[in-house]
Length: 591
Image (cartoon, rainbow, N blue to C red; front, side):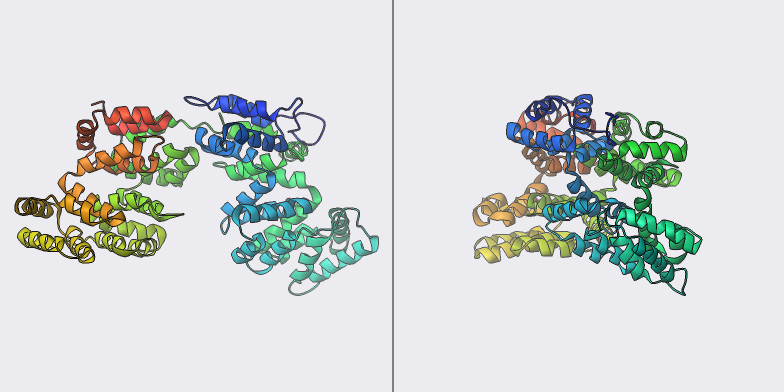
């Protein structure tokens, strides 16, 4: 972000600004294959946040789409995060940072609440309520404890006195009160620290700190370090540092985010964006004075490319050309050599569907299946087709491993999750499949039971079909179906279509299709994922990842025979970019 001179900010309003023209330029930069990242970068970083909000409104008005959604789709990794953050109003960005770090990133919470003005705090609280429908104070109280919580609540009120409120008599009294509350007694009166540091004006407290130094013969920072501890100590030190000099506070935070191995990218992005229109020039000067190195050069050394351009070709080449067993070895070696989780690193570097696809390939099959089950049940509504597809087509061992992986990852049994997310006969079918019970009885017995069930009422029919179709082995069921046709002159699918409905019918039908010809069943699922407008990318990724080392060759053959076009051609025409490239590698050569 380059300096535009004049003020202490590095981004100012743009001369001859035209929101409609900028919206059109961004649309053109994202049109077609790939995107013009330079054009996007140049335009967004040379507009103020207020102008960006106008551009976002103009983009929706002209193209009927949300600009942030389109930017997320087109860009990747940390560069995407940076550009998307620049497009959000400051208060909403602060709200998202706090929400994303809830319970885990106290440093982020401390940085934001210790450094924002009264107005910024009030805007943050309102934005949090608007974005998440929750009260920020209640969430902070629920996530923190003790004196740390009390000080955060005080800061959240946004009631610090304005800088013209200074009284010399009160300066001396406050300095003495702070000394009496800490250094002068056994134990510490934390309430006094909270009240004074949370409410007095900045200029007043600067004078109090000078007076405190004379009384205590040590700095207020040294006293806080000796008297307080943990997150409460870190919060009070941050408040003191922001009162002394916000630019120096942020210069130190930036330095810590980049020194040593790796970069705390969230912190770097958050500070660069939030201060770019406030005091970035002062922060740069403080950084240079304290560390004898320019902030520009440190960013230059610590990041690269489009911040930071990931070599996606290399990632795709390695991941897509290794077996799952080899990928697990790579994961383990990565952890051993670098002390980091490869999946977490890939998640931060890749975007959207490519990220889902590569992460799916890097997981063990059981981890992947568990995640797909979770995704199918979370949020509004349930992806019943995904639940059916997974549970119907997996072997007993695969289902048992998936149940174990689900329990491990989500601390809840898969059966409980299904129970709470589905209902009726459909729920019973899924639970029966998830329990992976195989009872081996003679197929003539099953044929007679199925034939008798066809003459029963619908409830009994569903119960009987479920008891057989969900528990018998596939070879066994194939014989039962053959005997059923021979003796009744009816196909089992006809009975299901005629007598059942809804998710129960879909589940029973999927079992029969899978028993008869599983590759054909998956070919049909892939076709449905790509036909018509739009692509069901979740289904496409799920099947391509899970079957790539099992029967994808046979699925390809069935696809070609049934749809008179190759799976390769469908993927080629329905996806794009590195996502398409990876899918085509998994698919293998053209048929």
